[in-house]
Length: 290
Picture (cartoon, rainbow, N blue to C red):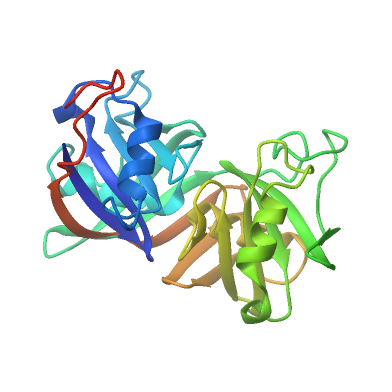
């Protein structure tokens, strides 16, 4: 099976072109196998480049985390998706529509030497309401600046629906937080019935945040686009920052803007790492070979 590996700020995914493959696989199983960093390609998950299911979009994107669970949206993933389809001539417009489980997203590509270097994505309108996130409690109530106890200490958190469920955890020193210990406790907290991405956020200034992330279904990653957006809007909501911030992650930095109309825009890099054949994937167990 042909694949392409790409990354946005170190958040890496294996891409499969379903226009070429044209068959149905056991995608959760394939995601687990390609994501394995010892016996597979090694990635934070699998992303499918697919035809749209309606005329409202130009493409459809499906994302499977490294544990095989399907996610609604991926910010770094959609930037690389945009680079993939534009650089390969699947579309010739700089701005287009991509169908996801979180709705239709609209990336805009920026070129360097004829190839996509940066991508700006309209990520939609965030919600702090418990029913939208989802988060336990009254559905119409906002979950802003709440106390949450995990790993023996109490954190100040804000829940945000940003395509995916997110929990922004504000801390004084992000480097001192045991992310791999506390992250999974919050991800699987009873507060979040569908689990959540967990962002540990340090405010460095009115326009700069430092973020580390524990992603739902993938664990510790170098970046999370929806998480960066959630952190930015949560920080503004709590009065820490303005509407435009740079979010510094382990793999680089993203620019996030929450415009006065309520829409969130994310700008960041997209890089192709390699292409190849995943020869390990021979089907079996009712799985077709592409």
